[in-house]
Image 1: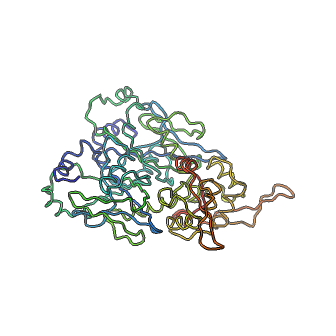
Image 2: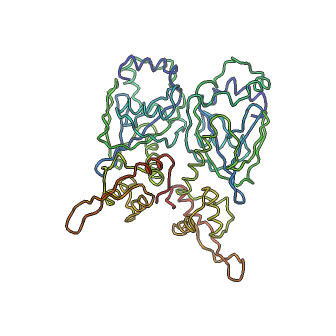
Amino acid sequence: METLAEILEFFHRGYVDYRPNLTIDCAIFGYHDGALQLLLVKNKIFTKWCLPGGYVRKDENLDQAAARITAERTGIENLFLKQFKTFGEPGRNSPQSVDVDQLFELTGIKAGDPGWLEGETASIGFYAITDIVNATPQADYFSSECRWFPVDKLPPLGFDHDEITREALFTMRMHLYHFPIGKNLLQQKFTLKEIKQFYEVMSGKQLNASNFPNKLISLGLIVKLDEKLKIGAHRSPAYYKFDEETYNKALAEGLVLA
Amino acid sequence: METLAEILEFFHRGYVDYRPNLTIDCAIFGYHDGALQLLLVKNKIFTKWCLPGGYVRKDENLDQAAARITAERTGIENLFLKQFKTFGEPGRNSPQSVDVDQLFELTGIKAGDPGWLEGETASIGFYAITDIVNATPQADYFSSECRWFPVDKLPPLGFDHDEITREALFTMRMHLYHFPIGKNLLQQKFTLKEIKQFYEVMSGKQLNASNFPNKLISLGLIVKLDEKLKIGAHRSPAYYKFDEETYNKALAEGLVLA
């Protein structure tokens, strides 16, 4: 919502197009150069950094809503967003993470204005992983800031977004063992050392020497190329690439790596 | 809701205590004697068998709601229910799975009566695994039937409950690799053959000779007892039991088996 008029329309008549009491929050992880980051937004009416989120329209399904909300808040399109958990603790959407005075001043809304935005709201968590170079955060009427933070150095988040982020990380790391990952994050060709390092960053821990790479090979998810990386006279590790067909099948059906 | 008065109160004024447009559906798997089953309910106003489900109260969180709904619909208490996915396709709660004529006749509700139950409803899926002997289905005003079906011989389900069941099975089977299971389903002591067979039933596939058992031993989740099962002169496999402390820690924190 870029203009005040859009925001007021949403506040007063949003119930026509949106489902009441149901939102989506997105934990968008960014991978680049061996580091894992998280995309956070902050605007004039938030008191803390938050995950990008928003309400679900009546005419869209949850996947579509997550894609739309992410695009509107952060400018990132075509993310592969995966639902992981819904959060519904009573009081989770209490207004302490909102700067109410600012909200009133910026919009002319007054305390006690009849609103459909009241009551307990459950939020459906989605996560996605992208290369951070793909992100071009965009501002709205409330002047969003939108910035990447290293996952191990996050600021305290608003609402229950600390918990949502923890659960997103937990599920993403469990999914490493059941869905292929890396196609748009690694170079087209890579060495076994590179893919092992990639899995170490994603899982947040040291892995056994060849755990993931060996399993990826044995399941046909990565295949050896004729080409080699030339480091020195006696060191020339082979390049590998993802096998498109096996990768997409595993993405759709799941598998067991470990 | 056991009486007509309770049902009418819910229909007309349920919005006071319940969150609108948010339900929970529970896939309760029953394990017994080497077979996996699913608990389904049917009543006079459903046209098909369904997962037990219901609305979420405003003063309870989602886990509490799932436990309450399961107890009310099926009589099963103290289930370890695990949330797995939320379903929100527009039209998923269309009335084609409800026998509207029966509803009107049984309740006196008329078409067009003002209702808070209209509009798109998202449903949060939970699953649980129990020994089927623990289930004592109970009836309500609409005369619920409540019965176990083998998971490989399910009838066509109402609403989008076929999809919810598929996703519940998929997630439960993924979780086999990340959470311990079996403490209230197996006998207190068991052989490696028995726990392998248990994992085969749960995962729905043949497993490598000693995949799960070996990993369970190496992680300290099961420990060998001095006692042995006496089958014959040269066959006396050792008994094992779960290690309480390791088991509970893994249940809380997750792990990687495979």
